[in-house]
Length: 322
Ligand code: GDP
Image (cartoon, rainbow, N blue to C red; front, top):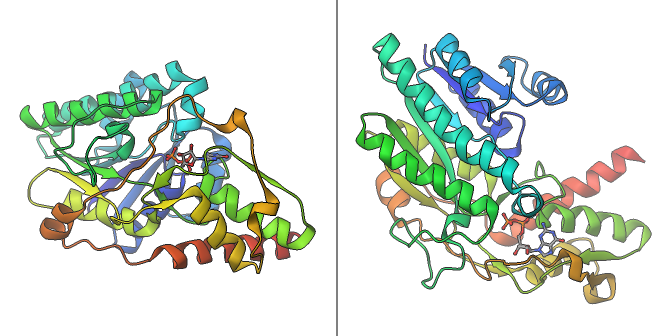
């Protein structure tokens, strides 16, 4: 049986991926950062073998990988929020950057010891492109990150291709923003959809940063599907995963408020300068032609549908909490 090890197993993508791999019949081990995360994984996916550990502790991770002896490692763990990374650049570098390279090294060591191939999937991010001069961005777009998160992801991304040249199968997916009701409200999408649900019920205001930032927002389960396709592809390679369409934060707000029947959304939104980032990519738009061509991947959920699903989930959550 194929054994997979998923880091970041408690997160949006990690939890979706564990469910997908279990459904495909794999034995799935998941890394949680603390006991609260471990309990959450056990609750939602009892068949996952959960380990608690720090991805940034590279020696402990190497020992864990040797013990699990996985066929596939999906490295999704790390600091996942650009906003958080501005206040925590060291921690971001340690976990998101060094932690990833530690995982590649652990895979190489395991491969040498067991003499069985270990495949690795690294979750890269559109943040590695920073404020790109060309749109859309593809696998050849220059890597010029503009946030601590992007810098850490760029280090991991470029180390992946170095490892490839040293005989390790490391595929990367360069993920553009991908959302679902499992997103925490530290991300603008979930912040907007949970606020729309709340304001529809009891009124109030929503504070946001830059309303003009444009993002290429896709449906998270589609992006998890791309990860699975990339690690199963015959060659390790880099794949941009994106819809190719962009919308502004204001567009997202308008669609979310419309879903709960509020048309005059500017009455409920204020801009808080403290939420505007020091540097921010103004527009990210990905060209996923390569993933479509080589992996047969396609996004399945359009923007309005994505916003609608997230808002509906938040409305239902409020109903349950009532
Ligand atoms: P990111 O693209 O991975 O950083 O995902 P986010 O959801 O955190 O941010 C998407 C965009 O929304 C960025 O351009 C942010 O500057 C912008 N944005 C505007 N207001 C907010 C806010 O209140 N919270 C967050 N997280 N982002 C905001």
